[in-house]
Amino acid sequence: MNKSQKLLIALLGVLLIFFGFVITRIGIAKPASTVKIAKIPAGEYDPAVWGKYYPLQYESYMKNSIMEPSPTGYGGSMKVQKSDMMPEIKTNFKGNPFSVDYTEDRGHVYAMEDIKETKRIGPKSPGACITCKTPYLEKFYQESGWGYAKMPFAQLADQVPSHGSISCANCHDPETMNLRVINPAFIEAMERKGINVTKASRQDMRSYVCGQCHAEYFFEPNTIRVVFPWDKGMKAGDMYAYYADKPGGFVQDWQHPDSKAAMLKAQHPDFETWSTGTHGKAGVACADCHMPYMRQDGQKYSSHVMTSPLKNLDAACGTCHTQGSDWLMDQVKTTQDYTFEVLHTAGQNVTRAHEAIKKASEVPNANQEELANARELVRKAQWYWDFVAAENSMGFHNPDQSLNTAAQANEMARQAIDAANRAAAINSL
Ligand code: HEC
Ligand code: HEC
Ligand code: HEC
Ligand code: HEC
Image (cartoon, rainbow, N blue to C red):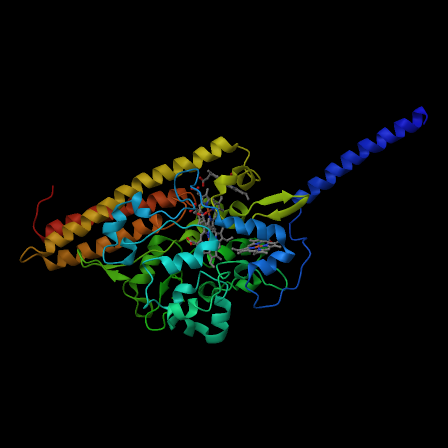
């Protein structure tokens, strides 16, 4: 080999490394959906079967079984009672099963197990409760329409095999792998807002697949249909106004045994809170943070471990933010601490309001008009408190709105106490 041949080889080597690098970089920027599509037949709900064709996504989905605390101390993937941190849960939900058993959410693979175990579900529970736990929902709805909602829960749960917890078919069309939504309650609520989810953009679908379950709902009396109360808007006040119209004859979730107020229970309004927040309005999808792109053996894929993004902060936030992980972690933690502080105070004042109303109602000749006023105020205060407490991010999905909602809850709880004291003619000032 002469000198110029050696030079040529060296040059080729450099070029190879350079283009190799460029190709890899381009690979990172490309959407991951370049995977080879295997036509899985409709009605296949076993994730292990899907996993044969999509092993990286399946392996990462299986990691939803990992149980560990969140780095912030809020949320987390362990089955702990929420009332350990907020004891007011026990008094504010008195008379409702949530006062007895209200555990922190954990990974998707546990959804069926956890719903069967919870003390909130009994022999009388309706089939509607299965809506957000399994892809077999598609089958039940195809067979019976909304009729499934009225069937006994146990009868439906018995038809769901052990692989039947939330999985691939909840979010993907088996034949095309396109994202899809199967919860009819979400589809109907979006339709009422003028949105056809089958025509949604890919970026919108990256949130809709989560929003079909991570949302507020109620069971319509008589039909037991699942309804999302979104017709007047996505904030606590909008939904309170919607419930005030007694939709489909729905008045209350339960009556509080102390205050005798007609109460509402909020259910994880994650989608709603996110949609009116900084990231939601900027078009940052749930999947952008909760399903960041990963790389293994040169292949790029979306993480299917749906858990706290902070366990994987660089991948989850670093694609858009350059502030560094310490700053980001501190920002999240500060938001959550501030939210928790106001929320916890509000929750304790709601408890005091229930107690004050009980006391006032036992006073002979108590002013009935003021008592009714106090009951309306405690219902509203608790709804606002619960809207933030039942949401899963402790304020992060929408920091300023969460603080505002919790602060309003606190103020209304104080007003309820004042009204109760006026009813009993107690001078509290
Ligand atoms: C079919 C309904 C359904 C869909 C779809 C769904 N979830 Fe969930 N999700 C649940 C339920 C139910 C739980 C609680 C399971 C338990 O505690 O047993 C849960 C739990 C979680 C948790 C808590 C896990 C932990 O480690 O603490 C996160 C985070 C989460 N979901 C995010 C998402 C994201 C992001 C999406 C969309 C990409 C999504 N979910 C789609 C129903 C759903
Ligand atoms: C900008 C990033 C971002 C977006 C977008 C986002 N989240 Fe989150 N989410 C977070 C962070 C940060 C937390 C707090 C995690 C913690 O405390 O460890 C969180 C917490 C959660 C939790 C509770 C996890 C736990 O540990 O119990 C759930 C459930 C959840 N998000 C669902 C959603 C859903 C559904 C959407 C879309 C409607 C969404 N998130 C959009 C960043 C995001
Ligand atoms: C809670 C919803 C949800 C579940 C459950 C789910 N996926 Fe996904 N999946 C997504 C989202 C969101 C994307 C990103 C799609 C996009 O950006 O176009 C995705 C992407 C994919 C892709 C495209 C390549 C990639 O990694 O981005 C494949 C293949 C895939 N998922 C397979 C599976 C398999 C197999 C299962 C079951 C073991 C599964 N998914 C369960 C929501 C889900
Ligand atoms: C897809 C892009 C994207 C991702 C991923 C993302 N963000 Fe953001 N983030 C934004 C945009 C856009 C804004 C709006 C302000 C701006 O333009 O800088 C924002 C604003 C913020 C703010 C200030 C406003 C507020 O709501 O408090 C914080 C804090 C923040 N992001 C934290 C995070 C964290 C933590 C993660 C990861 C869990 C994350 N972001 C992931 C795009 C993103």
